[in-house]
Image 1 (tube, helix red, strand yellow):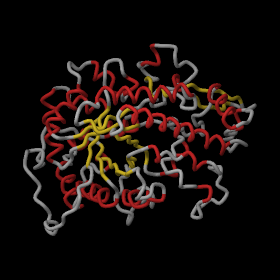
Image 2 (cartoon, rainbow, N blue to C red):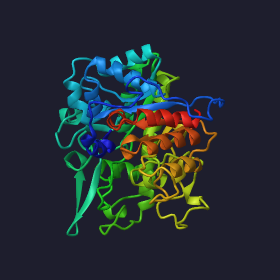
Image 3 (cartoon, rainbow, N blue to C red):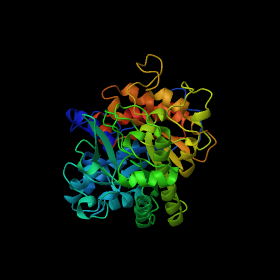
Image 4 (tube, helix red, strand yellow):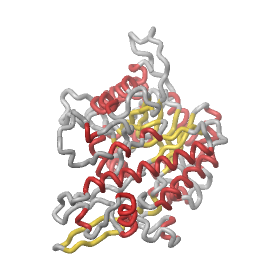
Length: 443
């Protein structure tokens, strides 16, 4: 997944061919004192497997067998795994296209088959809006003219002149991403996801589908947010009922708020939610038992920038009495309608923070404990959408105690837990800390 590219490079120096970890060597971690008599219903525990580095680890079938056994010995029996398939780059992590093409077997199909055998489950990770790599010009976008004019655009102001930059030409963008404001794009995203479910749901190990990058691309840091272009503006005008005569109506040339800024924020989140709704309806039509998951950053207040409102429609920031800004400069009175938790079975809460506990944290918000204890404001405990906290192995590096405690907090305070990801767990020898964290939680 694209948001993890930096983390992958940071861990290259930590690669190791050997391990003194007892789990990796085939041993077990003894139960911790005091937990022997505690009996609780188990909670789901998953591990992410995606991107080129993980596919390199699994380049031969013997490695798949080895790592599945290690993962299960750690107490984890669910995988989040990028979908791969010949000429199906829209389904997967664009960064992993080349490794797949160099493989001699269908890795995703093989993993599902082995998970059938090992009594494990797989949740297929899909990025349905991503259709190419702007740096290498690889991917389906560059093989057809179907999507010309339907990709995301951002506005750049240079010396007073406005220039639109198409993401297909933006080498700083993570991927070439389609614009969900366009009805054809939303239908395409649903079709892609339906194809995945139909292809793999016959496996008993196939549990569900996980969405990533169903949103607008990241701001480049100069207030040039994505959400422009002729097709975008046309659909905005039709849905909102206004006429745009100046691109500064959204964000001004100086980076301020234009007269339709809150409507723009609302519309971007609305079409993202409608995309997820369309995917949910298609997935459930093809397989009613298929779970629909979505990963996003745990910091809800940061998501309006990319058009993601992972709350339920019951949460209304415009009328939130605890809101710090009573003017609600980000949101209009309809923003709550864009909450998409109602369309999900599981929200994967991306608690990728270096600090584990609130006490002593350099940031009162960006720590695992805060994330896993405050999400209920946005998705209540009794909601049909369950919350699994996701933590990053790379964030704790050579500090196994942090890895252990992050896992424990996730399982104590949310409905499930996932660890990002196999590559980092291997290189930092986090097998035992993860097992200890699971044991400590009692789940």
